[in-house]
Amino acid sequence: MSRRLFVNLPATVLMLLVMVGAAWLSYRQAEQAGMQELHSTGVHRLDLYAASLEREINKFALLPAALALEAQVQNLLRAPSDDQHLQAVCRHLQQLNSRAGTLSIYLMNASGRVLAASNWDAPDSFMGEQLPFRPYFRDALAQGSGRFFGIGTTRGEPGYYLASAVMEGRRALGVVVVKLSLEQLERSWATVETPVLVSDDNAVVILSSVPAWKFRALRPLDDAARQALDRNLQYNRRVVRPLGLAELGPQGQDARLVRLPQTGTAEPSVYPVAGRFLAQSRPLAGTTWTLTVLSHLEQVQDTALSRAALGLVAAAMVCMLAWVVHERRGNLTIRLAARQTLQRALDALERTVAERTADLSAANQRLQAEVADRIHAEQTLRAAQDELVQSGKLAVIGQMAAGVAHELNQPLAAVRTLSTNAARFLELGDLSTAQGNLQRIAALVDRMGHITGQLRGFARKSSGQIQAVPMAQVVDNALALLELRLRHGGTVLQRSDESPSPEALCDANRLEQVLVNLIGNALDAVAVQPQRRIHISCSSTAQRVRVSVHDSGPGLPEHVRSRLFEPFFTTKAPEQGLGLGLAISAGIVRDCGGSLSGANHALGGAVFTVDLPRAPDPEGGVKP
Ligand code: ADP
Image (tube, rainbow, N blue to C red; front, top):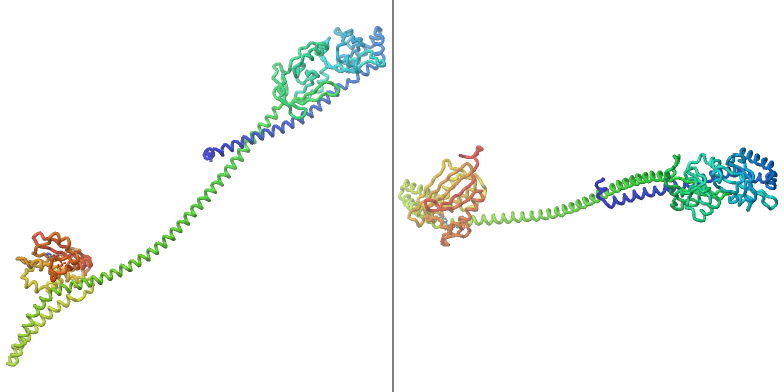
């Protein structure tokens, strides 16, 4: 399957696209879900951390206001030169500071000079210091209260200042200030799980769960801000360096994506402090501060990546499944198409077979009709042939007629003389001589009967039945018919016969006709020759019987030899020959399964040979 998968490039590309798409969708979905979860967790944390911070600040918020209402504080402001009273107020502030756990508590007069302080007896006491430039002082004089984050000018200690004006009617006599340490505020963040920070209105980090971020600016300070810092010594001339936070873009309401660089001096932390974060901020009530919770995106990305991998695997499996189903369907379609093609081929084959069968049966019928025609034609031909054979016979008989008449004349004349003489001897009473004459007459009649009998036998229509025929007997019969011509022509007949004579398979009557033709032609050929000889020989092999008629005639010139068996070919005068003898003879021999040939003999003259199948031995074999 994999080979086909890669061969099918568009399908492969489509699958890859689907897989990549599924992975991307899974990633996006998981990332969105993760971001949402991160967002809601962040909001929850913001609420939690803001509430705890506000609770921590509010714990001390009433302390300066309560002190401002105290009579001894107001009296000291009215009579600052009363040392005893000053001492009492300082001790009071010291006790209060110690009990509350604050950094310091002090009382400033309306011109910004510190009149009494909780650290009155410490070497670095800020008793008598002039701090009219501090914003919390100015705010308290102007609005009755002030809050400020800053670094102390005396000890350089960062802290949160809560200030309340000491009022006499509408006039402010002075300001009571409580300074809280950052540790006190940061204590509420002991259990934070992600980086959290508080930035002031200068976007300078004043509280942070990551100590290295403190007093780093979230955004670069502008000139106006720097000048203000120079005036109010908010960070006590501490260099405020940028944190390097890069804004990557807003992420929903009150949130944005940021990137924090790896700070070289960063202390080991339980959570990541560099990388991409979801930053969620909110202002802290009652302050100019902003609380920011940073949630690292690492986990979201990890989750999204694993979801993307899952999506990829799932899409790959679905693609594979789809491919398998597609392949199966394809195979089914191919099989179906192949089956339909096969069915069509079978139908076509069946149609062809039906057509061919119809053609064949029509051809068969035609063939049968043709065969019937042939049989009929053959029968007609055979009948014609029979007629021809018969005609040939009759022609031979016609040729013999004169001879036969001549042959019969002599005995007839003898019979006439003998019968006349017999009658005379009877009158004379010479019975024995008359009897002798009558006996001679009977012999002559027998002889004439024999002659006519032979002619009748020759003339009769053949049965056409093939049987074993003794060859010598057939030759004898033919010679008997031609005896007269032989005798009168003065032809010397020579015979060479095997003993016993071999038997050929043929129709005896017709074979006799063949030999009459051959011997008759030989007689014609030798008729004009001074030496008239005819040699008839019979020979045989295990399968064949041969009779040859060799004459001492002129032989066969080439133009005659090539046309010997042509019907109506003759070199003889019309009354002597029709040119049918050899044609009929060849047909007869062929019908018997044999052959007739004519050639010039080496010793001169022509030789005609009849070759026939040998009759089987009645005892089961063939004769030697
Ligand atoms: P016909 O004898 O009526 O002419 P055949 O078919 O018997 O018809 O013979 C055809 C011809 O073959 C003869 O006319 C003759 O020229 C030639 N022929 C046949 N037998 C011989 C033979 N023994 N010697 C020479 N020529 C022959």
